[in-house]
Amino acid sequence: MTESKFIHRFEPATSAGSPPLLLLHGTGGDENDLLGLGKMISPGSALLSPRGRVLEHGMPRFFRRLAEGVFDEDDVRRRALELGDFVTDARQQYGIAAPVAVGFSNGANIAAALLLLKPDVLAGAILLRAMVPLSDPPKTDLLKPELGGKPILLLSGQSDPIVPATNSAKLAALLSEAGARVDHKVLPAGHQLSQADVTLARNWIRSVDAKAA
Image 1 (cartoon, helix red, strand yellow):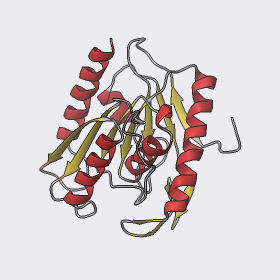
Image 2 (cartoon, helix red, strand yellow):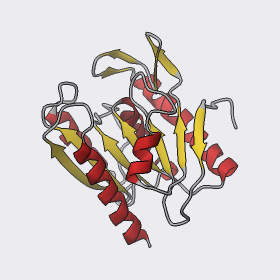
Image 3 (cartoon, helix red, strand yellow):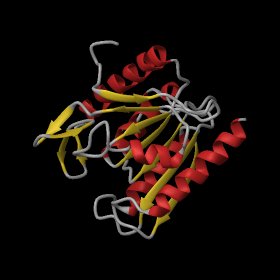
Image 4 (cartoon, helix red, strand yellow):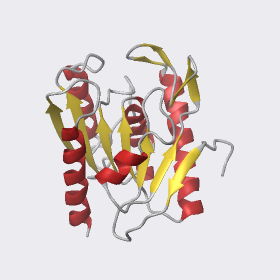
């Protein structure tokens, strides 16, 4: 591992046909938080779950913010590249394919930044309550879009007090313009996850897996 090593958990796959998952927790979570969610979404998948390296009042996060919904974008870029290096090293160490990111809140935001800045690192993503991570993202080459058809499921909450509907819609458009196949659904929920998130994510990853096969 490089100097950007993250405290993390790794659970090997129990089913050869299941895609590896990169689990990215929300503010105040850790490397254990989303293991159960990962197992519900894709039983049998290898699980790679790092802990965010930034502390906000003692709570782990993946990047700094200046206020609620206002990100330190220089830090977002640096931390996303750090995370990308970690995933690349972990793939070699554990012998796994490019993972599908499953991120919640702050974890979904860093996953979105990683998709925009280092698109080759991930095979796709499930973004739960994500916001636009960068106000000035990399420009898209319309002849060769960076995300090249990678599948992304974006699940937003209709009554989310943290993520405005216009922001999540903008993120969906941004990822689509970068070449991703985005499935954006708005659920009758707030910022917290619901059973509907689990069911939709599980069905989505099965359909993506079937298409890949």
